[in-house]
Length: 410
Image (cartoon, rainbow, N blue to C red; front, top):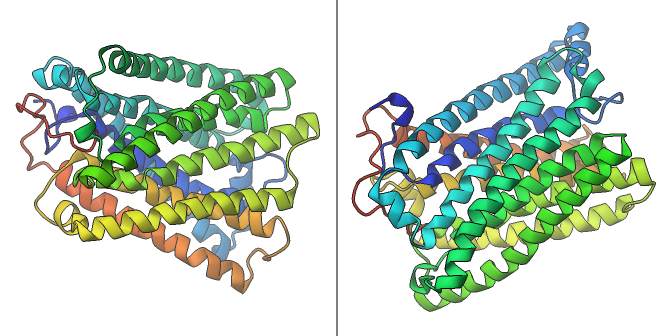
């Protein structure tokens, strides 16, 4: 078997979350540069921003920036490496009996991890281009329509996959409620919200009204779809969990609300930027603080619920440090990344932007410390999962291993 197809567990599309998590970690290092380096000439740090930093020669500045850049490059490489590995594995998987079984049950929704990860790939490519390609920002207005087209292609894929899934369920009525005792159905909502935040990027950064409006309208459509579908799936998922108890393999999905809120919240911030610099509207800074605080509160609530449940199930001991193996374990990575990233938004546009906390003050670094801790714990968890799922000692792609265990998605 080709090494690009090697996984140590039975293959299913949830392994795309391994690529997604690495892409998220690349973004988490970029977010330091985003909020801690001055870049008045552009909405995000660019090659010109980095050039000014390294020209200073100040080791107190150059060293942390270099560490952040190494983190971006390493996790971006891992993201694309695992993306291509998954694409190769998925192609082989489509020819198996396990795939036909997946397409006939609740677990068909796991295919939404594919457009979800492809959206992250576009985001990571944009970050790499801005930081490492000299002069790219001078032609960025020509790139925004290309970005809209790329996200448009992923959006079509996502809608096609979701239409296949929801159409079959609504027509045939063969949804297995006894296997819905988790929030794993929200992977579709996560994909919709990730596409929404992607469309919001040109809306936030472009100065061409047509580009801003196109990005804004498309973003609002997918964010609205995510909100409607998310509300339905959360209610139904909790109903089944209260009736049957949470699925052990699906229990990490209790935290999927955290990344959904992060990307939706970032989209909200981006859309407000578009309203401000093109239409001279949008929420004021205090309103932004309130909105961010509400979203962060929901994240903390689901974070605590998930932590209690995962500990009672001994999930970390069994699936991270122990012998049990499940592709859904990679669903633990995105919540850690998302909490760190959204925490940075709460601190900067929220607290610093309203003059409540001064940047680089003692209280600022005290607030930053738990976010750095969450990031480090997430990186450690990723390394442990990679060692278990992607190590060379595995049996390779076992997509045809009879009945693929997919409680995390069913």
